[in-house]
Structure formats: structure tokens, C-alpha cells
Image (cartoon, rainbow, N blue to C red; front, side):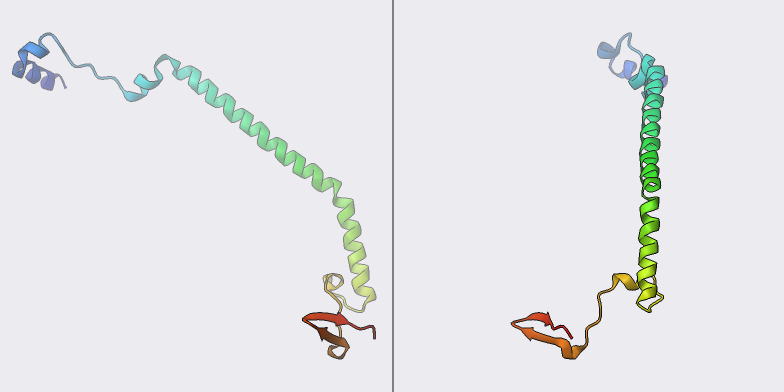
Length: 116
């Protein structure tokens, strides 16, 4: 770069007389003396983000532990209902009852189930 500066000084002596070229890395130019402070700020923001993520995970875990008893009761009741209906499938309690096709009648597009 000094060679280019000398050539420019020779080519344009009026404008470039006594001037030189100074190069500075872009990182140093932008951050300068605040680099250490910016790195500390980055670390602090990272720690706050980490604490927030741990807090959300802790709340989700606490909710799941709080609902464990409820889920156990629901599972037990669902299993008992499935076994008493004669179907051993755990999802049997959740499916709608099957109705014979002869018990259905249709009025203007609505399906009415008759008690049989």
C-alpha cells in the first residue's frame, strides 16, 4: 500500500503532497476500545438467555409432575372402561359407539339415531 501511495503522490503532487496511507483492520475500526465491553455484554446476554431457557424448562417439568397423578387416573379409568366393554384396546374408550345401519334414519341431511 505504501508503493501505491508513493505512485499517487508522484502522479498528483499537488493533492497528495505529504500524505500517506494508514490501514486499520475493520474489527479494530468498528469496535476499537469498546471491544472488551462488547464481549462482556455478549456474555451477560448469553447468561440471561440461558437462565430464561432453564426457567421455561423448569416450569414445563413442574407442570408435567403436577399432572402426573391426573394422567395416571385418566389412564386407569380409560383402561377399565375399555376392559369392561370387552375390548382390550386402550383407545377403545375414545372411539364413538357403533350403531347398526338399520337404526339410522336421515331427515334433510341430519342423521338421527333411534334408540334400539
